Length: 96
Image (cartoon, rainbow, N blue to C red):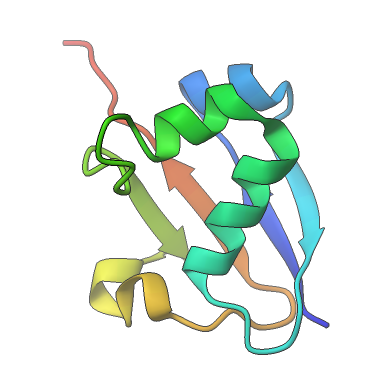
């Protein structure tokens, strides 16, 4: 059972009320499985941010990294997670 470290920033950290946490996942869990699990754990506010209404598709403004590599450069939402992976959700950042 892989144990994955999640790191949260900005709005997401405010919603989940923490900057990081460990999540245990079943064998062969994917990024999509992880995102659904954290949305379930942290409730509707996080779910609505990750999967905005009305389409309930993954929010395209978010970036997801596994061990500092964007999942777009791996297998996307189908990327398998393994023991000790570090998973980071990066929301858009503004400023100047």
